[in-house]
Image 1 (tube, rainbow, N blue to C red):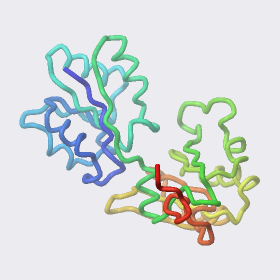
Image 2: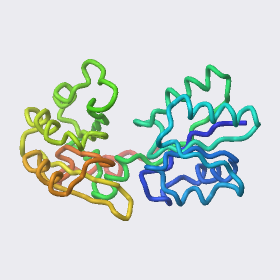
Image 3: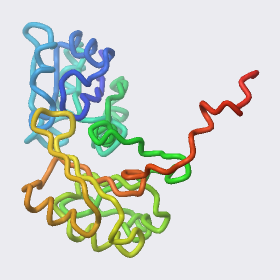
Image 4: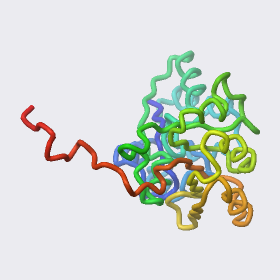
Length: 248
């Protein structure tokens, strides 16, 4: 018996990996967050599978389902939105499975920031403009941020920044980023990336909060901040340069 933590992708059902889809199809128990994971993926579950919506369950209740499946000898498909490596709350589940000696594996998925970049048709690492991406969030209605990971400190690098779980605090986010990035810094907000009801807003730190308020976006969105969003004058990458040595 194995628990498989599966990245279900950012929202579109066809953005799951082939490996993830096969794991769903072979697992007689499926735990999923009904508020975030596309319902279409459940059609891949085998006939008679136990389907458990974890959206309103506690951590202990979720782990209890896994342990019960372990005792029964059933594989578990544990679906998480996006990719399990980023803001997925997988770590505490794995810690409990380790303590109970229950085997598990992780199957990666398409993260929300990658889906947002695709919708924006932008590379987030542009030569000569930005080569670093900071993935972060804010602490409102969530566990506190570690010391030194506040937006002012992180923003001093002026690296491309992607904020999850922060759109409800867009005005405060703007206020904390303007001193380092400048009010004219390009910003994009992508809500429900890859879904049919996706919303894309483009602007600057000076006007993005007003746009978000007018659009009524309060959740399931990422905020992308950085000059890479509008960069047009930049050197070609060395990767495909004619001057690059290709002998090795």
